[in-house]
Image (cartoon, rainbow, N blue to C red; front, side, top):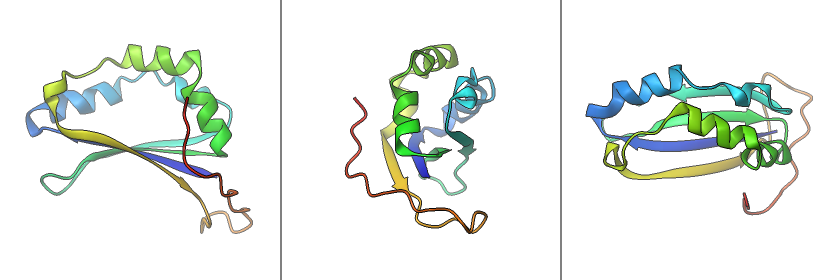
Length: 118
């Protein structure tokens, strides 16, 4: 199992628009094999990023998503904010799950090395 966190540094004046984009998202990721969950986390402290947090059964399942036609279509349908809506470049993080308290029998994700999406 892996998690993917995309940290997006949205300027306060674009926060409502950013949140609306995610409320109206295409939802194609929800139908992908190996997809477990998607959370959009709103920052509480000024200057912190929004986090788009997804969980996948495996690294390969996530890579299949980002390489799929559904990924391209989903991002196109969701729309985008102008570049000046962000005050810092986003940061994408991939983590291999070693333990999950809700899944005591979970086998840790094998070490996969650096993320190579393309």
